[in-house]
Length: 160
Image (cartoon, rainbow, N blue to C red):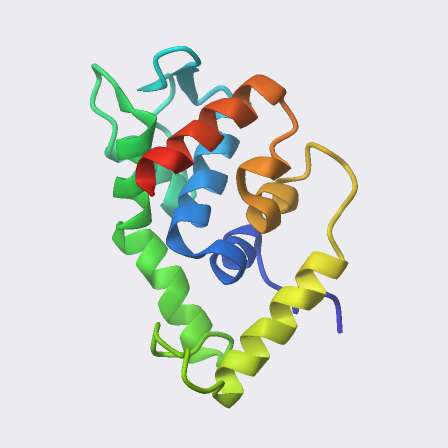
């Protein structure tokens, strides 16, 4: 079995960092594909191309008005979208995520499965700096462009 159990980049992001990580992967991808612009100093996101076939990316561009929106608010809105929630539901249905968010008192079998999967994903992390699985696994630290990495790291702090 591969390290990522056949998961796509959004599922990897969800396992490693939850809904906010999925939103980050989508927005970094949109930026790298010139479908959105991010003003690096003001952290304002504007849409350049609204024709996205990917459900998470489509949800992201739909949440950004023509006048633009701050990166932190876009990340929060995308993380709360139905498209991202569906990724979590699908992972839970496959038994890869626990149903409850609070599992601090004891580790259920599903929690152990999720931890094991996360370890395998991290162990198989690609070395190419522009591989989207790095962002999915590492968050803003996995973004290859230093200026963009700083913008997303700052947006993460806003989400706190």
